[in-house]
Image (cartoon, rainbow, N blue to C red; front, side, top):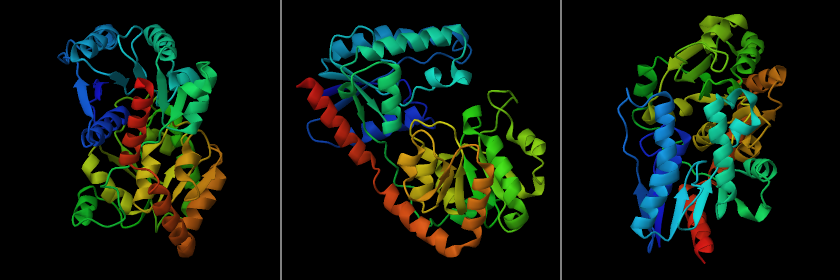
Length: 366
């Protein structure tokens, strides 16, 4: 079976879509009788790749170049591993929709061109042979908002890379020293856009700090916003506004994928109060390193965390503060949740993702 795969995000390995397409192709390529062919767009220079021109270039690739390439390759099936399937295609097409954030969250609807693009890909998704998604929560959203029959939307969970393990690596201490990390810490690692709910994270830690602050500071890791905006507020400003003791909060402006496992392994708990996730790779990465999660009980997060954490409404700062204190001070609770974390994380693998995706390909081709 020859599968033509839209590789627009292949060169963006730090994004969720980039990780997904790379891990999926890696596993498919190891399977007998499967040929996964990447269809890649010619990248423009940074100067040219801006604004409407960049959006048009992406749209042209998705709607015209990709289907033509699929036909010329003689592929049996096409797979678009993000929300952008072509309107007209010469062969059966599967699309993976990771989430419906631009439809569900007002802050993410964007400018008029972005809203028009969202309307287009909503239409094209309805014409796909099958839609894959990352969680039951996203599947429910897709069926409801895109008005699709349930049998045309299938959940296939994402996997976890082998580097995320509780076993310390030889360079763990060196990595943590390089970033100046404390010996013990509560950890947030992820983005800073508004749905990540960093305000509640800081508010919860302010409430917990009188008990745990000196022994367990809060570590906030991620690529800090270049500008402080309502869509991506600067967490350093939020910390000042929430009157968190700045001596107890460490910010690491960071994007090194190879260092992430060592950072997770040094954490007492991973705190993730996000309001919406289509899947949520960061909490799964933490679980695979044996780190319990304190998080929100919304969208896909309960599916990912299972019983390996404490999940609360996303605005319950007091509850999250109590959970932080418990995990810092109660060794037995932390050990039990760490044990459950490894069991829960073992349910997710890229091998399983690829096998279930291949089964979907075969079903559509048949």
